[in-house]
Length: 84
Image (cartoon, rainbow, N blue to C red):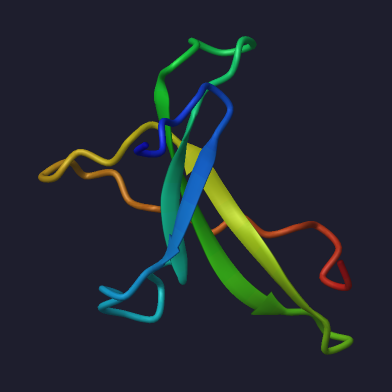
């Protein structure tokens, strides 16, 4: 039986097509749950970061699906506390 995604499920993969340092380390999407438009696909981008204290963490971006040819780009999201 093939895997069938449900609302609220997320799928994230390592970005093996990373062409520059600003590109996300991981990309994927999730299907919106009941609080948003159920079933709507939302893009997720994650960057591996290191805090001032040396702890590794991930920061990310969640937003509308990327459309080729658009001027939109992934933006780095960063916690206010760098020692996250």
